[in-house]
Length: 143
Image (cartoon, rainbow, N blue to C red; front, side):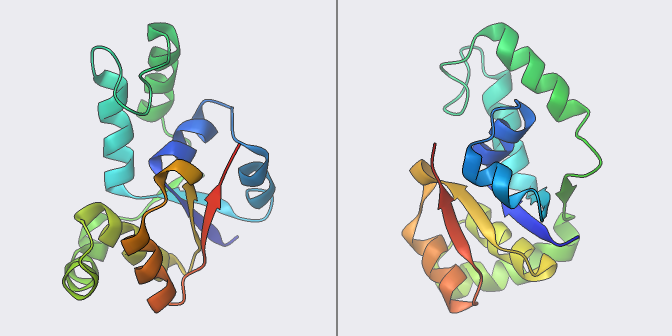
């Protein structure tokens, strides 16, 4: 099965069993993948005392449940190893002015030959432009 790379917002929703309809639809035909840095950013949000930006409005109990899901990540969610992506990330960051997070997302999509799906509130012009330059399908997902 081919993959789709998800940002941290969509990974959160998937693991919390609250995936929006658009994401549920794509996951019928593609396996979920994410990046090391999206995964890290979500973990950091969960462990923050009051919850980080991704989980601030969540109860402590809901964050604990998400923490359990993150520490026992299902085998069907793929995270491409950093060594496999690092050189391409460096090139992408230099060529497109991307952050490490954005460069890793594009590099993972290139490695997996996968589209990138991001939450509609996390849409970024640089990563969108880099995706277009490398003919990577880039989609936003709303509620």
